[in-house]
Image (tube, rainbow, N blue to C red; front, top):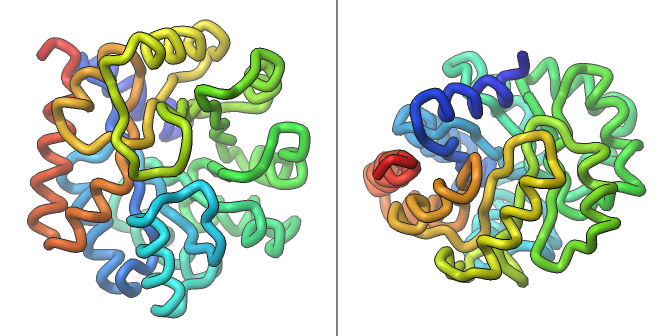
Length: 261
């Protein structure tokens, strides 16, 4: 069983949704990034999304964009991010999803799957790679046992959702709002409830809901509608304040994912 599947099953057995957390590699620099990531993992993340800095992050809002600018200024490269992942893997068994735009991964070519697997990566989530063009990256990854994390949004058509389902393993990331990361989501909306129910009907992997989740209260609501809750921008903002603030937020979010609360 893959680490990702095991993490979702373990969370379910504990009566909660899995907590998936995004942090940008090399933000604010290599050592600072490692400290933040390990603090978040130790505080209760079930799955780590490790962001690959990119110069044109079109799907991301101001917090993630600023993190990527800081990371690129600190010298982040894809090989460096994979070295960071390797050092994280030496310290924890938490599943690591490499969260990236397609361009940096395509530049690695056929070496991607083996290199990522050897670094301890468990899955790939490629923001701007539609399912029709996924095989160039998905093939080498799958050959080394890596999961391919699909994305669907409120605007995803039924046909597109079926195409994403056909290539998705590990879990599917259900984007909870239109627009970029960082905007606040209305977790109580009927439209969101219908969207998540529709995704769960079409996928045979866990559904993790994210974009705009900022608080334990929001996580609590989403935990009743999805198998996992994804938090990114809020973690970055907390980490900018202090490692202690990041740790506290992760603990609060983890508590919020308990379905029985």
